Length: 376
Image (cartoon, rainbow, N blue to C red; front, side, top):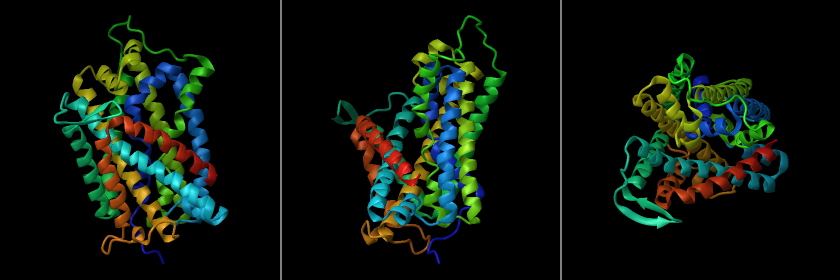
C-alpha cells in the first residue's frame, strides 16, 4: 500500500504536464523560430519534432501505466537495466530538473525587468561578467520561497496553484490567437515574415530546439503514485498533455508570424509580447502577455519541483541517497526534506547571476537526453 495520498485527477495531470512544458521559452524564442525558418517553416519543425516527442511519450505512457510508482525513469531503469544504469539515469534526470528549477529562479527577476524597468538596486558582486543586484536576486529568491512553501503544504495545494497558473496562460494565449486572427496590417508596406526561410536548413535549425520545449511531460511518471486514475488513463492523459502542448506552440508561432513585422522580429527580445502589442494595438496587451509568461515560469517551476522532489524520494528509497530524503510529511504525505533541499538550492541560484545559470541549463539539458535515451 502506497504511503502517498492519491490526490491528482485528470485536470491536475494535464495542468501539471502542460504547465511544465510551457514555461517562458514561448515568450522569448517564438520570434527567433519565425526568423530562422519562416512562419510555416517553424510550424513544420514543431509538427515533426512534436511527433518525435509524442513517440517518446508513448514509451513513457506504456511504462507509466504498467508501473505507476513514484520515481518514473528511476523505477523503470532500475527494474529493466539494474542498479548501475538506474544510478546514471536518475542522476542525469535529477540534474535536468534541478537546472530548470534554478533557471526559473533567475528567469523571474529577468522578466520583472520588462514590467518594472531599471529596478536593479544594491550592487552585490559580479559573477562571470554579470552584475548581481540585491533587488534582482531578491525577486528570484522570494519566488523560490513561495513555490517551495506551496509544495510543503501538500500536493492538493500545489495542484491548485498549477491549475490557476495554467488557466491564466491559456487565457493570454487565446487572446494572442484571436488578436492574430482579427489582425489587419495598417501599414501595407510593413513586411511580415515569409512562409519559409532557408528551406530544410531553416527547419532543422528550429527542430534542434523542439525537444527542450517539451521537457516536462515526464513529471507525470514521477508523481504517478499520487494520481487518482486507472492505470491506462495515466498513460492516455500523458499523451493528451503532449498533444495540447504541440498545438499550443504551433498556435503561438502562427500568431507571431502573421502579426509581427519581420524587422521587429529580427531585433525583438520579447517577440511574442511585441506580437501581442501589434495585434491589439496597445502596450497593455504586451504587458498582459508578459504576465502570462510569468505564470508560465511559475507553473514550470512548480511542476519541476514536484517531479524533482519525487525523484529524490525514490532514489532515497532504493538507498542511492540518504534515508532522510525519503521522509514524508506527517500530515500532507509529501517528501518534505526532498522539497526543502531542491527549494533551498533554487533559492540560492539568483545570487550567482544569469551567466552561471546558462551553463547549468546547457548541462542539464544533456542530462535529460541521457535519461530519455535510457528509458526508451
